[in-house]
Structure formats: structure tokens, C-alpha cells
Length: 446
Ligand code: NOJ
Image (tube, rainbow, N blue to C red; front, side, top):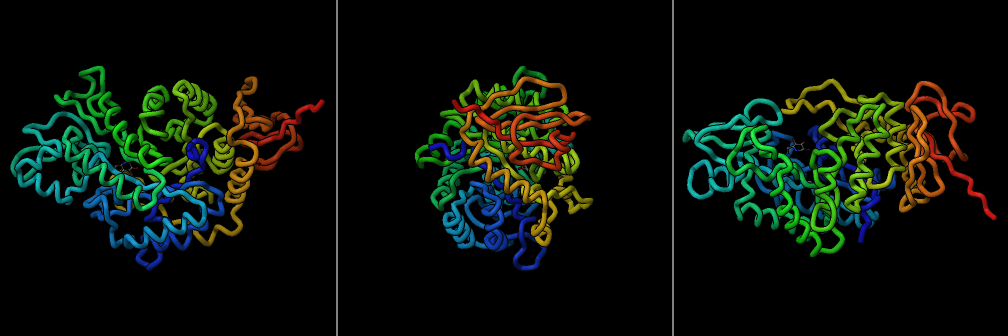
């Protein structure tokens, strides 16, 4: 029932994955033609970023129909073909669902703009408050009739009102639609932002934030969880930014299965150990394991953030930590941010560049990832976790008979056991700075 607990996932940002028709934008037939890539990497699941009808004001996170496919990406039969191919390859598919907002072009919002009861599905007010959009500027835009509507992202993404029953019912229908088509689960966009303060209090006015991670969120998550549980072993992975103690409150039975650990993705090099330790401890209290991420289509490339050597070392550590691990497409090739601006409202085009398929043949980062994922299945998954005694500048722990040691310091350090895998060259029997090693601990047999 818990295939996902220590699964390795691969995050496909469809627009940049594989273009099959030469329009410069990745699409579903392109993904189908290169589904062998995540399969060969050895991952368990593939999450596909939104492919639904959309004016593409936010790369598909502005949706006009949550239960259809945009011709830009292909058709519903392309999705079905991917589901079938994935099943043959032993890969599980995760759909990206977006409950917080629709596109401003969604029929619901068009009707809302015309006035009438449909307006109650969104947040309309006579006067805006001081809330800000995630992309900067006010979170309110004036409708033609003078009222203001809320959008925590672009003005083309009006926020849905989750106290409205149409909204919750329609989202159930969306979940069922993709689960019925064979998806093994969903990645839930803005999973912590759905509940809004009923009085639209200003940020800082109340102890509880007016629109992030409010207590009312729990009931919404429970509803989804009940629906997912009725399907068996399907999974809900929340995109929810928070400290590990808050994340721990959102995972577990009756809650989300997993929440991405973004603090691990953005942690300073020197605090990787503390960041990992906190997540393991806090989620452990909830009986859960963390869901590690190295990068995403919203963050700077891991190889740009830390430099290539450290990025490889961090990946190797991630694959040994207890919990699930997610790879953002291209990080397994050592891709770096590129200087490009295609007009993304969040300035994130640099991390969304197309996959360099020509470079996959001899890529050393790719080989390092593949071997790690294969060894992880043999030696890591399900093995007991234990921190090893702390040494300055070293992050080290064991999983069963394997020690994982990361040198975050300036000088080579020792490591126990016999090396199984490493992120870069070793220095004789020593582990150089910015390098990680997995080593088999020789257990005495009597
Ligand atoms: C999170 C998504 O990952 C991001 O790309 C998007 O802009 C926002 N949610 C809004 O949907």
C-alpha cells in the first residue's frame, strides 16, 4: 500500500521535455517517445506538469478546463497512450492538479465577471486589501463593473473560493477524471493556499496568516484523501511551502500522503545536515518520511545554486536519505540555468530550458544518478536510518549496512567502510571536499 514512501520520482516539465512537432514546445507525443529516459534512470513515478487547455499566462497553471488536453500538447488519446506505455514500463504517473485558481478565461470566471451567483465561486470584493501577488504587485484586479477579484498569482489566475461547494465538487470530478484514466496520484498545486481569511484580514493582523496554511486547509485535504483512499494506493503530493513542523501537520492518514521538502532544495550548503535532520525529526513525529526535492521548474537549477560538484554530491545524499526523492528533469544531466527571458511572470525561464537530448549519451552526472538509484533499491530503501556521530564539516548517516558521508568542509576527510558509489573522484582512501560517498560497512560475522 505504500509504494510511494521511498519512491524516486521524476518531474517532467512538459513544455521543455521533448518537442515532437517542431513548434519549439514540448508535448505529449514527445514525452511518449522519451518515456524510456525516466525508465532507464530507474525511477518509480513520473509527474507531468499541466497539459490542460490554457492561454499559457503561467505555463499552463492557468487552466480553462481541468479535464481536457490543450491541442498545444496533444490529445486525450496521447495521455492514454502514455498511461499505457508507463504501465508497461512499470512507471506510475502523477497528474498535476491546480485547485487554487482557474484561468481568467475559464467559463466560470467569464460568468463571474458577468455578475450573478457564479461570482461566489471566486473572491470578489468592493474594495481590495493589501495582499500581494506571489509575482509582485497587488493581489487584486478591478473587474469591469468596479468590483475587485483576488489572484495570488497573475491577474489571469483568479483564486477560487473553497467555501463554495461548486468548487469542491468540481475538483472532486477533476481528481476522479485523472484517477479513472489510470494516474497513480496527483501533485497538488498551491496545496496550502486554498483557505482564505473570511474577513480578508491584512497580513500580520491575526496570528494565523490570512491565506497560507490556514487551519481550514485540513478539511479540504481530508476530502481529497478520502476520495484517493477509495481508489486504493493512489497518492497526493502537496506543493506546500512551510517549516518541517507545519509540513508534519499536513501529512499522514486523513491528510496528504506527502509534501515536498522545499527547504532542503534551497538550504545553504553548510546547513544541509540541520535541514535534513529537522525534516526527518518533525515528520517522524507524524509517522511520515520527508519528500526530498533537489529542484523544480520554480527554483534555480541545483547545479547553478551550488555548482556542479556540490549538486552531484547533494543528489547522492538525497538518494540515501529516508523518504521519497524527486528529480527535476535535466538535473540528472547537470543542466544549469540559462540566461533567457520568455516572459514568464515569475522570471523562471532560465530553469525551464529544453532538455539537451544530444548530451544524454555520455553524461557523467546521468551515470552517477542511474547507479545511485539502482543501488538505492538494493541497499537503502526500507533500511533503518541512523545519524553517525557528528564531525565538523561532515554530514554522515547510515542506512542499514551502508554509510553515506558528505564532505561539506575544506579538507579531505576519512569515511568508514568500502566505497560503493561516489559523486566525484576519491582522494586515495579519503573523501575530498564537495563530494559524497556511499560505503558498505563491514559487519563482523561470528
Ligand atoms: C506552483 C507552480 O509550480 C508554479 O509554476 C505556478 O506558477 C504556481 N504554483 C501557480 O500555479
